[in-house]
Length: 168
Image 1 (cartoon, rainbow, N blue to C red):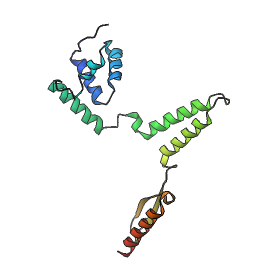
Image 2: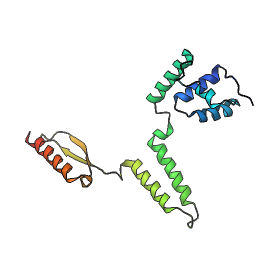
Image 3: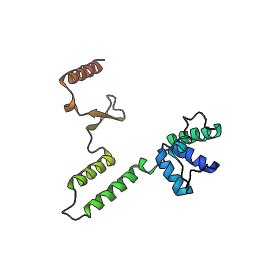
Image 4: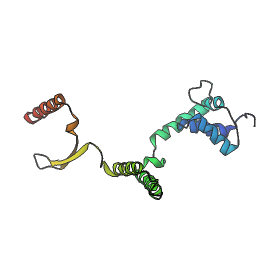
Protein backbone atom coordinates (compact mmCIF):
# COMPACT_ATOMS: atom_id res chain seq x y z
CA UNK A 1 0.00 0.00 0.00
CA UNK A 2 1.32 3.45 -0.85
CA UNK A 3 1.92 6.01 1.85
CA UNK A 4 -1.32 7.81 2.67
CA UNK A 5 -2.30 11.17 4.07
CA UNK A 6 -3.65 10.93 7.60
CA UNK A 7 -7.07 12.26 8.49
CA UNK A 8 -7.57 14.40 11.61
CA UNK A 9 -8.28 11.51 14.02
CA UNK A 10 -5.23 9.62 12.76
CA UNK A 11 -3.04 12.71 13.16
CA UNK A 12 -4.25 13.08 16.76
CA UNK A 13 -3.55 9.37 17.32
CA UNK A 14 0.05 9.82 16.14
CA UNK A 15 0.61 13.04 18.11
CA UNK A 16 -0.75 11.53 21.32
CA UNK A 17 1.39 8.41 21.04
CA UNK A 18 4.52 10.43 20.34
CA UNK A 19 3.67 12.62 23.34
CA UNK A 20 3.59 9.46 25.47
CA UNK A 21 7.15 8.59 24.36
CA UNK A 22 6.09 5.80 21.99
CA UNK A 23 8.88 5.25 19.47
CA UNK A 24 8.07 6.37 15.90
CA UNK A 25 8.58 2.81 14.61
CA UNK A 26 6.03 1.56 17.16
CA UNK A 27 3.59 4.33 16.15
CA UNK A 28 4.09 3.22 12.55
CA UNK A 29 3.06 -0.35 13.52
CA UNK A 30 0.09 0.92 15.55
CA UNK A 31 -1.18 2.87 12.54
CA UNK A 32 -0.99 -0.30 10.48
CA UNK A 33 -2.83 -2.33 13.15
CA UNK A 34 -5.56 0.19 13.99
CA UNK A 35 -6.13 1.95 10.69
CA UNK A 36 -4.48 -0.32 8.08
CA UNK A 37 -2.32 2.63 7.02
CA UNK A 38 1.33 2.48 6.05
CA UNK A 39 3.39 5.58 6.62
CA UNK A 40 7.13 6.20 6.57
CA UNK A 41 9.11 6.94 9.72
CA UNK A 42 9.65 10.45 8.37
CA UNK A 43 5.89 10.76 8.03
CA UNK A 44 5.42 9.77 11.68
CA UNK A 45 8.23 12.08 12.83
CA UNK A 46 6.49 14.99 11.12
CA UNK A 47 3.99 14.90 14.01
CA UNK A 48 6.66 15.32 16.69
CA UNK A 49 6.64 18.57 18.69
CA UNK A 50 10.14 19.40 17.46
CA UNK A 51 8.80 20.01 13.94
CA UNK A 52 8.33 23.77 13.52
CA UNK A 53 5.80 23.10 10.72
CA UNK A 54 3.49 21.11 13.00
CA UNK A 55 0.13 22.94 13.21
CA UNK A 56 -0.60 24.79 16.47
CA UNK A 57 -3.68 22.68 17.27
CA UNK A 58 -1.56 19.50 17.09
CA UNK A 59 1.14 21.14 19.22
CA UNK A 60 -1.51 21.91 21.85
CA UNK A 61 -2.68 18.29 21.77
CA UNK A 62 0.92 17.09 22.05
CA UNK A 63 1.66 19.37 25.03
CA UNK A 64 -1.56 18.57 26.89
CA UNK A 65 -1.11 14.83 26.33
CA UNK A 66 2.53 14.96 27.46
CA UNK A 67 1.61 16.96 30.57
CA UNK A 68 -1.18 14.55 31.52
CA UNK A 69 1.02 11.55 30.77
CA UNK A 70 3.84 12.79 32.99
CA UNK A 71 1.50 13.82 35.78
CA UNK A 72 -0.68 10.72 35.95
CA UNK A 73 1.02 7.37 36.17
CA UNK A 74 -2.03 5.68 37.70
CA UNK A 75 -3.08 4.36 34.29
CA UNK A 76 0.29 2.69 33.70
CA UNK A 77 0.04 -0.84 35.03
CA UNK A 78 3.76 -1.41 35.55
CA UNK A 79 3.93 1.63 37.82
CA UNK A 80 2.00 -0.34 40.46
CA UNK A 81 3.75 -2.72 42.82
CA UNK A 82 0.95 -5.29 42.79
CA UNK A 83 1.04 -5.52 38.98
CA UNK A 84 4.83 -6.01 39.01
CA UNK A 85 4.56 -8.69 41.68
CA UNK A 86 1.87 -10.53 39.70
CA UNK A 87 4.05 -10.48 36.58
CA UNK A 88 7.06 -11.70 38.56
CA UNK A 89 4.90 -14.48 40.00
CA UNK A 90 3.78 -15.50 36.49
CA UNK A 91 7.37 -15.52 35.22
CA UNK A 92 8.51 -17.57 38.21
CA UNK A 93 5.67 -20.09 37.77
CA UNK A 94 6.41 -20.41 34.05
CA UNK A 95 10.06 -21.11 34.85
CA UNK A 96 9.09 -23.50 37.64
CA UNK A 97 6.76 -25.44 35.29
CA UNK A 98 9.71 -26.19 33.01
CA UNK A 99 11.24 -29.63 33.04
CA UNK A 100 13.71 -29.68 35.99
CA UNK A 101 16.48 -30.52 33.54
CA UNK A 102 16.00 -27.20 31.73
CA UNK A 103 14.91 -24.97 34.61
CA UNK A 104 17.16 -21.97 34.89
CA UNK A 105 17.97 -21.69 38.59
CA UNK A 106 19.79 -18.41 38.06
CA UNK A 107 16.67 -16.88 36.48
CA UNK A 108 14.48 -18.24 39.27
CA UNK A 109 16.82 -16.82 41.90
CA UNK A 110 16.82 -13.42 40.15
CA UNK A 111 13.00 -13.43 40.02
CA UNK A 112 12.79 -14.26 43.73
CA UNK A 113 15.24 -11.50 44.56
CA UNK A 114 13.36 -8.97 42.43
CA UNK A 115 10.07 -9.95 44.10
CA UNK A 116 11.65 -9.46 47.52
CA UNK A 117 12.85 -6.02 46.46
CA UNK A 118 9.39 -5.12 45.19
CA UNK A 119 7.77 -6.36 48.38
CA UNK A 120 9.83 -4.24 50.71
CA UNK A 121 13.50 -3.45 50.30
CA UNK A 122 14.57 -6.90 51.47
CA UNK A 123 17.76 -6.94 49.41
CA UNK A 124 18.91 -3.35 49.63
CA UNK A 125 21.89 -1.86 51.45
CA UNK A 126 19.54 0.26 53.53
CA UNK A 127 18.53 -0.32 57.08
CA UNK A 128 15.61 1.35 58.82
CA UNK A 129 16.16 2.38 62.42
CA UNK A 130 13.33 3.63 64.62
CA UNK A 131 13.87 5.66 67.75
CA UNK A 132 12.13 8.21 69.95
CA UNK A 133 13.33 11.74 70.47
CA UNK A 134 14.96 12.92 73.69
CA UNK A 135 11.61 14.34 74.74
CA UNK A 136 9.94 10.97 74.27
CA UNK A 137 8.17 12.36 71.22
CA UNK A 138 6.90 10.42 68.23
CA UNK A 139 8.90 7.68 66.60
CA UNK A 140 11.02 8.94 63.74
CA UNK A 141 12.32 6.73 60.95
CA UNK A 142 15.60 7.27 59.23
CA UNK A 143 17.48 5.32 56.64
CA UNK A 144 21.10 4.42 57.16
CA UNK A 145 23.46 3.40 54.39
CA UNK A 146 25.53 0.25 54.79
CA UNK A 147 28.65 1.62 56.53
CA UNK A 148 30.79 -1.28 55.38
CA UNK A 149 30.74 0.25 51.88
CA UNK A 150 32.32 3.55 53.07
CA UNK A 151 36.02 4.33 52.93
CA UNK A 152 37.99 5.14 56.10
CA UNK A 153 38.00 8.83 55.17
CA UNK A 154 34.22 8.83 54.69
CA UNK A 155 33.72 7.09 58.03
CA UNK A 156 35.88 9.70 59.78
CA UNK A 157 33.93 12.52 58.14
CA UNK A 158 30.65 10.90 59.16
CA UNK A 159 31.87 10.48 62.76
CA UNK A 160 32.97 14.13 62.84
CA UNK A 161 29.52 15.26 61.62
CA UNK A 162 27.80 13.08 64.23
CA UNK A 163 29.96 14.55 67.01
CA UNK A 164 29.11 18.08 65.88
CA UNK A 165 25.41 17.26 65.90
CA UNK A 166 25.62 15.74 69.41
CA UNK A 167 27.55 18.67 70.87
CA UNK A 168 25.34 21.27 69.20
